[in-house]
Image (cartoon, rainbow, N blue to C red; front, side, top):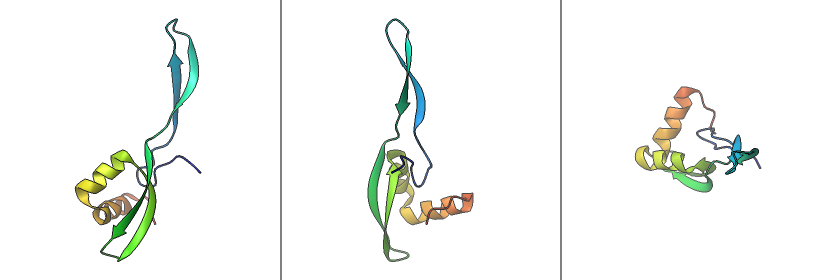
Amino acid sequence: MSRVCDLTGKKVISGNNVSHSHKKTKRKFYPNLQKKRFYVPETDQWISLKVSTSALRTIDKKGIYAYLLELEKEGVKVL
């Protein structure tokens, strides 16, 4: 199962752990992903998505249908 947001495309990035002596070792930064079911009243169906919490905030602000239409205009293939 990949750790990629279905809507925003956020994914794992790499960086360094930096110790007190400034020695660096590789590490990963994971996006905060949540599995969530959304009801879309315009199409009268439920959809399951793996979304980042920042995408959830945007959905709360704009609504799921408006956000999906906006992503579709930008060329993001959602469904």
